[in-house]
Length: 78
Image (cartoon, rainbow, N blue to C red; front, side, top):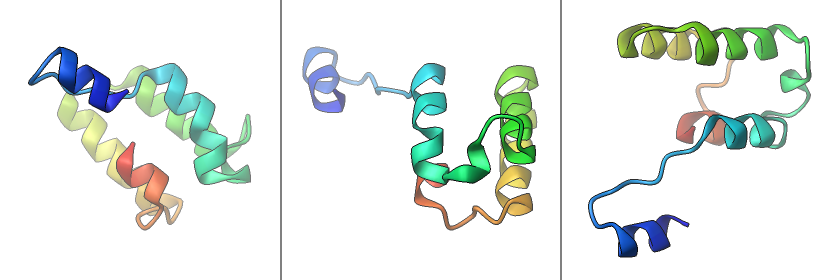
């Protein structure tokens, strides 16, 4: 999809949509991302309640630290 978008609309980057991130979360993180777990709840709070970019970035970094996901490839690319 990235290549097709780049070919059709040069200069436009394909971003992950919320649905895709949530759908692939369990695959990339595993059982930590099951419904109702602390990670799942904090993840949803971040993507639903953050109002500014700075607020989101700080909360995202803290999530990675809190759940020892700083080396997790899925979380780093998302």
